[in-house]
Amino acid sequence: MTGEQIYNRLNEYLAQYPAPEWAKDELDEAIALGITDGERPVQLIPRYQAAIMAKRAALMR
Image (cartoon, rainbow, N blue to C red; front, side, top):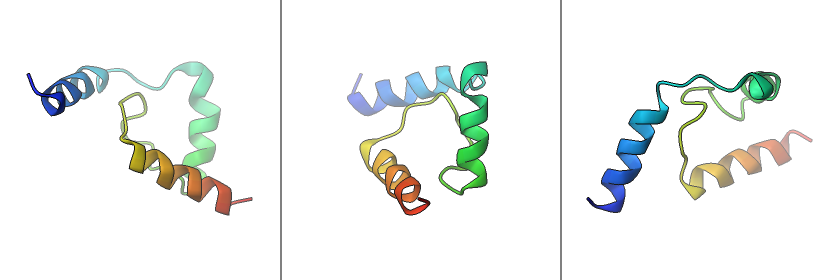
C-alpha cells in the first residue's frame, strides 16, 4: 500500500467515531469561532490544515 492509501484507509476507519466527550466543548468553541467546521473530528489532517487552523485561532485573539 502507498502512504496515501494507508492515510485514506485509516481516515475511513476513524470516520466511524465521534469526538471524544472530553473534547466536545473545545470542538464546539472552535466551530463557533470558524476555526473548523467540525466535520471528521477524529480523523487525521495534513500539516497544512493544522497550520490553517492554528493561524485562524491566533487571529481570533
